[in-house]
Length: 113
Image (tube, rainbow, N blue to C red):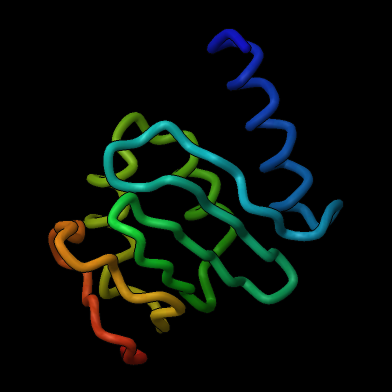
């Protein structure tokens, strides 16, 4: 699939998810930090799958933040500037041993805030 088609598919999928037209499903993203994202607009939950294997859910995240993350040029920079430490979060899966987590990411199975 070429980049244009992939971008269009991602935009349509995120529009459905962000506006409650579909169940929040995992959407792959092009990033060196993130593998995939899912956003549940009804719950305001943003789930992030990191390239190191960790999976985190962030709560009470505005839809605009989730949409800007997906559209951002650098997902890692956006995550660190606008998500990390700003929302209640929970680790669903700890990072794989031997893999380096994204800077600023807590890798223990704990809730924050």
